[in-house]
Length: 360
Length: 120
Image (cartoon, rainbow over all chains, first blue to last red; front, side):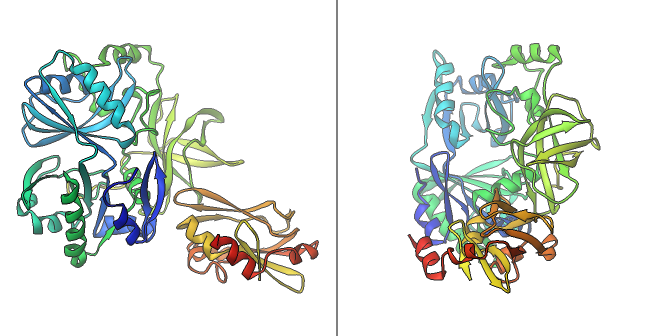
């Protein structure tokens, strides 16, 4: 599958790879360089493979609140909320963002690999409820504009975007078509995400690359998207989150609002908490040179305790960073060993995010 | 200079071979952030893994194009791994070895054969 910007990526010399059935740009000029551009200037990402689903009606708020670990009911209009969705067994179905336009009008943005699964889940739990669900997988596209110059750039086209606080969004008009601009992002570098129908997304991609020249804009691929989010300690579904993980065992555990009267999976999670035999996720850095990668075994005091869920080289820290999932309770500063090929390499538990955030 | 199917190059002078990866390889691998070099004095056989190149995305093995004993490694790569990307066929050389079976060098691909292989 390809997004509507496929030819643009090819024309820009992107190295395209298979990403869960999607032919997406891994990089254009290089992962390290693109990573730095986002941290220092502004980068633009095509993330149109992600799925947008509209959830509307009198029962929309209650349904979304029930499906989500985080608080959805009673939030302010024009705000977005990051949350995990659980199965009834309390395992992670997906992580996503819920955008509230009004009490009866929402849309959600879900991971590309879980589009159909999440849609089926929504449809299943909407039966008998006053809710209309409309997927916009084919007609809509999504862009992310991230970096210290992102807000200045987007404000040149949409001046009201400059007033957006973190997790706020507005609905604007571009040549007669609706564009949603949200102060959200997966990089920690600040900026916006943009939702619109395909042709508008293509026009905005072109005009942002043009107007962004004075801000040193570059197109950025999924390779840098991963190194950027990992520097922030953000979860990636399929790594830190999956259907074999309960959200309580992950870096996204903070989304769980236990004071909610009920949410799908709550009972299962309460039982799991009582058992006290759960896993925990931590951020680690490799003490010496090398690269920690997903799947590498983790040792504590010589005993195997888990494995790496995500690992990479951090361009900002200039060392390897990773998130691990272990059957132990650890503290910041604890020493561990990671098995890299035949060697046990020393690492240390650190607090997340690995790097500081921008201005929020 | 001769080449392997796995994108290594080797130059031999007075039975000492200098080995690295080709420009095609470094482009495929992306930014190299760490190079795991072999120990000087280790003996390698043709086709044996000698070096591991860690890029942001994955770890890639580099194979010895010929058999021999490692006599020198490029220490500069310890602080400047990007040389493998910037000068793969010159300053980004990986190791030098003294050949134990010089005929192995003759059976490697020349530049034309390698070019046509990567153009396929």
